Length: 600
Image 1 (cartoon, helix red, strand yellow):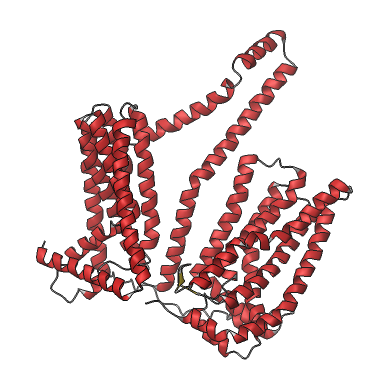
Image 2 (cartoon, rainbow, N blue to C red):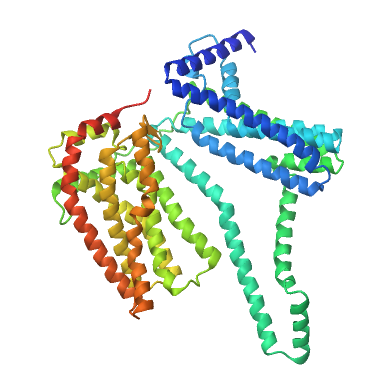
């Protein structure tokens, strides 16, 4: 390695960082400096605390327990590393290789520097400090053989960061196309959410299965107590009296022991678990697993870093494989234009605006991200309730389940509804130049949201209706509540979109150049959301009260109240649409300036 060139690269990176901080706002420089100081303090504090933890608390714990502690640390490091992939793929390298290709500089040095710069993250720095501190504490409390835990820690961090960097480079090579880039960023976020929530879902499913087994055993014991033989009754009474919890605890404990045994057997074969396995064998007095584990992880990390370097060179040198030309190129089929279509009972200008907006949203990854998160939340929360409590719910509470699912879907769409012009960005110029009345533009944008919100709400509503066995009037009332809530949501969203617009970065949900007034309005919209949608819960509440106080059928009262509420909100939407259109026309210049400003 040419150290003169490497020092020049370090000086270049420092100069670029200094220029960015001095030319930007003073508040941004102060926040960046405070973030660096906080990271250092957290890392130092975590390392010192880990030393005392390993020297005092872990002095005499068994080797298997020590392995499970390190397993938890490994899972935390992997989680933060995967979360960092989402932010890393949306920003450039610390030093751009394309600007150095014409210079007589070894790209290997730039690659090494970029890899070292990628290590400066919260999860990596704090995790490395804590694990090294814990290794030092174990060395103090358990003997000098735990010095070998330090190479294990370094090898683990090197292996994980090398392969994460390789994954990041591979994703960047796929995301040259901006549309593909946004789609990949969306799917990465969805995958991380699913991976993070999968243990909770598995645990809930296991708890439900264990609860059903316990209830079956109780039913068997009660049946034996009610209709026993003489000998069977005495034996059953003695078993129930002396050990009431033993029949329930044994199957659960044995199942947990089996899972622990399988995970323990997997440690020598899974590379990311070599660190806990080596620490356990060190506690048992064996040195070779720690030595071989450290060497293996370093070798895997070196292979991953080399693979990443080769992928990076092929990407920046445009060394792509030639495509096969054996298959003839077929002419592209004509794609129907959505804007040319018409909607029944809808004026042509509103239908054109709605179809154009719907087509734009179906192609926008940030909108897909919002819809995916809304669908996930609307399915996850009711699913957790059903998995934890089963389907035996009180009859009076069943009408509220569908309403809760509707509210969750609308909450996921809150950012989109309250900032309808933010995703338009430069396309808002075309809306300004249209001679269409502004109230019709708002109606077209609201109409474009309806099929997407209905599609997202259909799955959880159907699931709730089937699992809770909702009667037909309650299902109809829930659909009317969805329509009423959507109309109220659009009315308030139109007002927020006109008063506090802000630009949304392409491919993400992050606002750009958002003033504190706009941020305050957005925060207030999210905080006031429960109060805004609270009228949606009135129909099922009225049905419950009518049945308890007057003996009327709750489902029919719920349906009638939901119909009246939907009619009232439809009337409110119609009478407020024209004044909001005039307000939009007066604030078009401000909205145009807010949604078309780009970040530097």
